[in-house]
Amino acid sequence: MKQSKYYFIAFIILIISIFLRFFTLQNQSLWFDEGWSLALSNNTTVQENLSEILGLENGDKYQPLYYLVLFYWRSAFGNSEFALRSLSALLGVGSVIAIFFTCLRIYGKKHALWSSTLLAVSSFSVFYSQDARPYALLIFIASLQIYFFSYAINVYKRNTIIFPLLFGIFTAIGAFGSILIIIFSSSLFLSHAIVYKNFKQLLKWWIPPIIFSSPMLWFYLSSPAASDPTATVVTRTGLPIIQNMIFVIYGILVGTSYGPPLEKLREQEKFNVILSYWFHLLIFIIVIAVIFIALLTSLLRHRKRKIYQPTDYFFTSLLVVSFLLAFLFALVTKINWLPRHSFYLCLPVVILIPSAFLHNYQRQNKLDIFSQVTKLATVFLLSMNVYSNFQYYLNPAYAKDDYRSAARYLLQHRNESAKSVLLLGQPILLKYYGYPSTIYAPERILKTVDGKNMAEKISRITQNSDTVFIIINREYSWQPRGVFKKEMSSLYNLEDQSDWAYMKIYRFTRKK
Image (cartoon, rainbow, N blue to C red; front, side, top):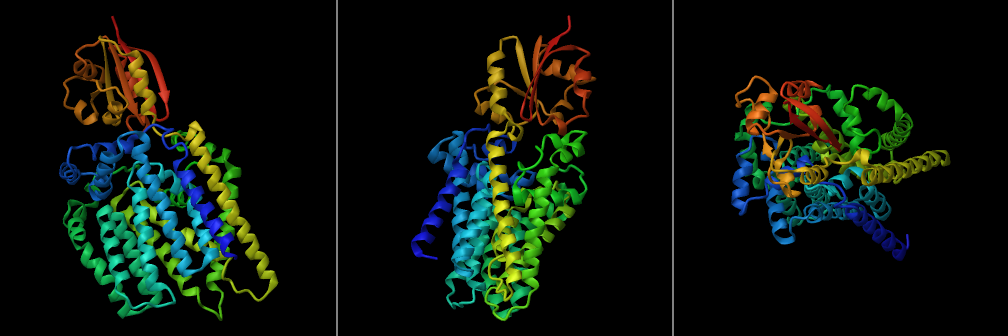
């Protein structure tokens, strides 16, 4: 490939990655989980923020780094939606650059262009690059881990100690970023040991990260979650683990906006909803099957030239081992295993896919046809991710929780005699969008209020107000359908109901 053409294509990939991550960055409202990011970076000093994070008993206690970085980011760039999310967008672009240089070192120019393109348009990566949550930072750290570790697996050996030290430093930073990075680092270690079987090299590369990460390892092992993983407050839906597994694979490969909207999958007719997207899912299955079969064939084929084969084995091992460890983590903690909890899987995936049609060294032309078909399937995968991205950007069915519209509605309808109560959701987000006077009364607080039913409890906390606005975010996770409105009917009439993405506001007036 000519140098000028190569650099031009690399530049275009960079521009695409920037465009996709900053396009409509502030178009959607901040959603429930982003409210946690606001709350945990909202104190006046970084020490206060850290103290609040470590005092939690939910999953955010074990991923403190992002909130501390966000605190300084907000101090420098402000609190607009664009400013809050731009940190993730920049880190998402950084991950594309890191993967490009990793593949360039290990595999060469063509592979680097394909892998960086796959990550640049990845709907999974783009979504979390537009989300004020820790995952873009964690993907970036994991991509830097792989980059520095590439000096251990590259065929051109170097004896310098600088790269093991840098790898150790970023592994320790990642350990401070999330317990999930420890799972990924463990997968790196096991894959290194399984594929290369070099004890001396193993010591050289893994003593620094173990030493540097020891404070966080001690923190995790001494926490209550170590003795009882189910004690930490996380979302647990009780879905069969096989459903979570399929959803993780699907979400990593094409994002969650390629097929049915997730909100529709929570309805009773979810199987009919899935069937209505049969064509999308059929294409997905065919494309992934072609790539998987081609990759497996490439890995199993005996090669006289083995320059890339050990590296392919390493990243295959990394993908398989990290998936299995994520599976075990989900079983032990009983967490609702989602694609974001296995964010690191997207990296070995985009690195491996080009190996399905590059570096095959076929001697028979008929095998080259299969290579071309696999390349076409990869182009289809890229197109599916582009489609998924624009569904997320422009289709309201895939929108995040719309606190912005809910706050606007409350501001338009407020009066002195009306009270608003948030039963489920993030009160900080209503304040963020300009409506500060909501009474926050989640279920744990309502249980302490005297009263036989919901209506009496609401009446007490609103001081018998004649008009009450009840705000509920993600009602599906709260009460059985119809129970809430039935209980309220003993004292109130339902006058109006307004719906937005994952948000509902009920306007009740007291019965005379």
